[in-house]
Length: 420
Image (tube, rainbow, N blue to C red; front, top):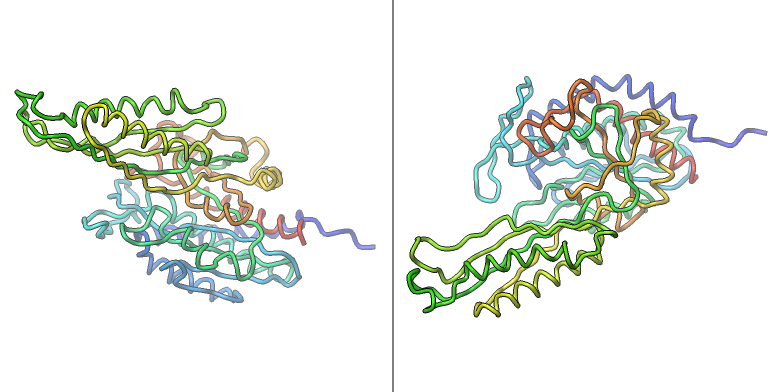
């Protein structure tokens, strides 16, 4: 009797393919890094991805999904379930300050302003890693028990104002539907960890991200006669202080942390004129959808009632951004041994929650998903003093790319073999 198939049988083939493809993946990453494109404008990048997937002989390659997204389908030689792997392709409106031969010199328009463009968050690494994974798995397709869907997504860093895009639109346009995806994996490089290290967390991993704008209307008067009007600056200041009590006094911090930050306070044009109106803008971060809704209600109530008490009127606008990125507990528990097998048990650990946001959350709302971090700070550097993601000085140790290829490939094939 033949022994049952185990996922471990793919390990040596994945390791060999990753080794063989490393130089190619590095070259792809450098090309993408030198030619970055902003959200919903990744035309060159998407073209490179689609050409690569077609050259590998994938069964299906769909372009222009969610504006510039690309979806590739690889059907294995054996029947089985469907798993998806995701990479984001867009860069940031940041002028690069890293001294490398392939540094970006690109310029573009972002929301009406000219700006530098840089892969300051590592999406060039994500895209090149997934291209490498596609090539590795295409080379062993006859043995794959199921189907792998490769999702190359635009606009993770948000599309331009007035446009739709990103993971939400990818899901809406059916990237998980045909064939029907049953689980999805994704990774993110981070300067918070050294190369070779992998970070994960079950349940809430990254925060939801919402933006609020507040307009407080008073009554303009001379600064020397404040009693003749209603001072929106004083009222606005009281609102700012009131908003700081939401997290400290209204949220159960033993359940999940949260953040309410006012980052903009604009009002007035002259030292001796009390203005008619001030504007506040801020961000809300939470790790629980129920707390997220509660914070929204508190922001409205506190702002409106403090303003009314001061004789002013408030208009509150809250724009819901990305949901909480929640790793499926069962899928996380299943994934950790596979990561440890590839990276070494000592190099895989639970990390703190991250108050940054990720639109990978939309895939996780549709199917079980697991998202993890791959360190990209050179081993001889302290991650705590390295430039963070989104910095013009963000530096990626390209040695992390091979680990990305190996871990994503292993998770996909292990999952297919385990569920075939």
